[in-house]
Image (tube, rainbow, N blue to C red):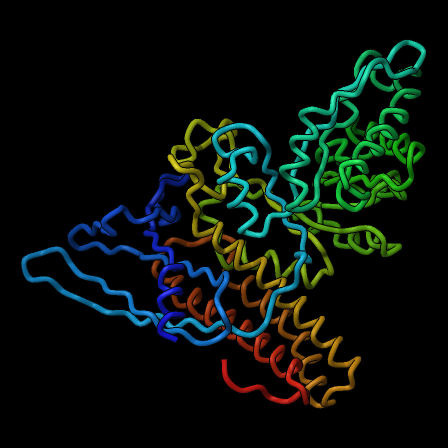
Length: 467
């Protein structure tokens, strides 16, 4: 194991927490900055610093590894502390491709755009698998015919870069067809032609209908808004052009059941906002009515730096599981503010999940909690699959019963416990015990899930031993 421990040591990333300002002029230790080339952590008198460790297990064999981290003060009478780091890698693999859609509205362009390799790598590493590409431009004439070739150059470059990593959404495809007034008779005649040629081109690139969707309008709401009415028109034209084309929408707070009725049969991927689901929880079964649609949810909570890593970020994924949702999202990975360290942005609020650095994105504690949340959901998927496999091969009935009970109870218990922590951090020492207790319960839940997966995977469906 000595060689393995050395490899683990080489895959431990060290960062320190940096305090940043909030909208209300508080200070919160949120940004996670890499240590400098000397591995130094400056600590002022009567102050403390947080050291953040991230372990990558890629390429490591299952087993238990112990490595030691030495901390030494730089002063005349140095103090030295050696901390053992116990890493256990189980002989289990989280499901791939990822079973959960995770969207943070990350686009090309800017310092933290998805056209930067380091940004795309960071998104993929944290479980993001919904990306955005540009609809190809086209022109039509007064007779409703396409004129000239569809402009695929930028589109194809984005597809080549993004499609290997997940689902592609195409915002505002209706705006890509030029030459005639939107929803005029010639435009309506040309739009289905445009879509059919586009679909054929996507298929030539190796994409199937499940690999992409149209995103005509952002946040439709009441049945009376132009956005909602136009979404219905565009979706109907798309259905007529090719009923296999999938359409995404993210209804927000003003949405009513009348809106849902208008969109019935026209939407394939629903992503209602969190506040809408609080007001209209009956929307979920309506969206799921024929079992074919994907149903996600998203949040756009401002003052993000004070959102709780447990009560908000981790809880989102347990909530999604309990509601039968297959996608989670929030606004946003990064805004286009001049500096993500000095926000607020133009809306006077904070939304970004990361910060900008000279080498690319700098994670926050919230962003790391998001990665853990994705893994929480994937662990539940793993348990469900292993349970189904064990049931099919008629494994030990007692173990199967234990696993079924765990899968039915622990998600509800964890969501309730995380909700108790609160949506935002109180930023007082009084909140620490409750936070620690919830984190201990969360880690215990993950341990139970892993152990149950190992029991179910054992040849006899009994208790497994060892790492």
